[in-house]
Length: 211
Length: 403
Image (cartoon, rainbow over all chains, first blue to last red; front, top):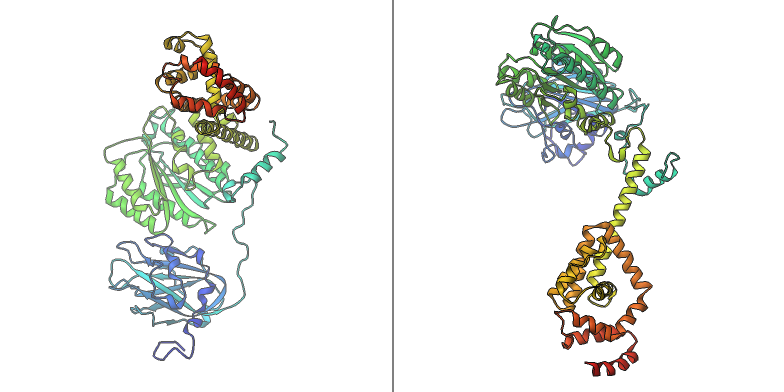
């Protein structure tokens, strides 16, 4: 059951339950309305570090508490529960809406669409609260979009940690990632360190040179 | 190589009939649009570009984002100019068009050409900008055409509101000789974040120099191997020249201690000069030899007039080093002559010094040198101390009598 820390943790390892962190494709995490580009990635870390803000946190733009976080996984997962650690002084999110397997959701889509599940959140500064999902609807999740429409009255919304608990399957949805078919070679695609030796070899071997 | 979907908003309002950009503002805009489309599709083959109008028959999308350049060029034909541009509606429509792009992985970008006056306030523009920023859309603005007092500030405020991590830009193009597209080529709108695709870079170089004024007159795009080879050989040559110059400087500075090769060279040069010139110092200065040696020689002579012989050697070496630094060719020639002198005519040099009377006569002719000075005598003694001591002793006796 949910580990609400009203028992001592010595007999089992809480961290192991929150193992879905390992299956998140962190480089491809995208957030909309974040004030610092790329800060959404700092929100996904191991359970033990959930209160550690040294790596940065996710904050929305001034005067606009909405946040949208897109979380792709490296394989299909089943999500059992979600935990969110927010900021103090009313900057914690108050509601959360989840969408499954939809890429490219933006705010107007999120506001108009019916979410797969919606929760009322409480201020969870210590990271002890978690929110159960309707497990039957969260099977085979390739990516998860979380929309936080408002907060507890603060100017911005701050999120320090998002934890996901569940199981990972080995299935993958789409294998074809970004493959670039080159008709013309484009040097900026290939960031190799070309040494002088290899470049002179290239010069020597090329038949076009007239020197 | 950012994967991007771009919507270009064209201003085809009445203000575009003006001819202050050749041939007309509208034509200049059309050329710029064509160039931008080419650059975007070249930098990443999966990029898409769409075009829409802000005025004319109304805000409408001419081409939805596509990578087909032909469609984009075709739609620019037959556009009519008229009415007023509606900036906020245009941006909203552009956002919608980008939202429905086929490849959701592409970044969203809007490029707006604004040539007519802007009738919105700053506040309204800032709200528009914030909305774009919230949806992660970048905005580039080309401010040209009509200039009124507040237009640049308003547009700057709009770009500042949209900008996150430097992905949005604004360019102000005043009317003048340069075509709109030429001015745009060097801006970040064209070159993107990483500083350029091959297309943009070569177009920029061509535009900037007016002709194919590339390094070594070889277009790196046309013949990259040749350009690379030429560049490498130039660098190697430069490195070699630097090594030679450094070696010449080191040798000349090290000559004071043991190796008298360069000083012997200087002395031999001076020795050649002495018999040919008159006794007076001024005449020596005024005797030009070859053009190559004249400057160096005069420097060496002038400096040697001012100081003693041991000082002369050092100063002349310094002069030679300076001259070497100034003129690479001269340095090379000097280096070669020094090596030749030291290698082939080492024996000759030592013979010259052995002829002590010759040396003494030279020293006598130098006004700053007193041959009877003990330091001079020691110097001369050390010159001969290279295994020729017997000969020196033999010569010493008659020369002591001579003195």
